[in-house]
Length: 207
Image 1: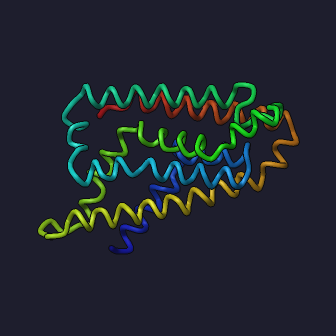
Image 2 (image 1 turned 90 degrees about the vertical axis):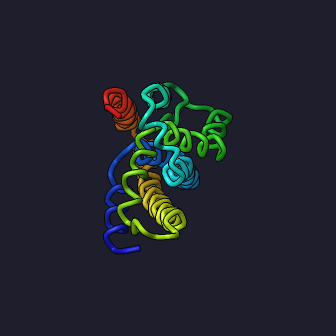
C-alpha cells in the first residue's frame, strides 16, 4: 500500500457526495451522537460494493443495462425521498418536531440504515472500486483478492474518519443554526436541493 493510494482515496472520500451530505444534515439537525451513526451507516454501505468489485460481481452491472438501470432508478428515487425528508415538517432539520418524533429521527438503527441505503443504491460505487482497486495491485500477485480487500478496508477506514469529522463540524454549528429559523429554513432548502441535484445527476449518467 503506497502513499499514492492513500492520497487518491482521501481525495475521493473528501469530495462532496450523498454520504457527506447526509452526514452533514444529520449532524446539523440531530447532534454529535447521531452524526457518528450517520458516518457509520455510510461507511457500511460501501461493503457490498467493495465485495462486488473484488469478486467480480460488478461486471454484471457493467454488462447488463437492465440491472444497472434498476439499481440506478432505485437510487434516484431514494435521493428524491431524502430531499423530501429535508423539507417536510419533523424532518432532521426541523425544530418543531415533538419529543417522540425527535427520538424516532435520532434512533441509531434508523440513521445507520438510511446511510447504508444511500451508498448501496449507487451503482457507480461498484464500478468505481472495480476500476480503482486493481490499479494498486500487481497483476501477477497470487494474493490479489486479499490485497484488494485490505485496500478496501483502508478506504472504508478513511471514509469513517473523514465523515465523522464532517458530522462533528456540523454538530458543532447545530445550536447556532437551529436557534435561527430563517437560517435553518435556508439550510433545509440547500440540503434538499443538493439531494435533488445528486439524484438528477445519477439519473442522466451513462454506465
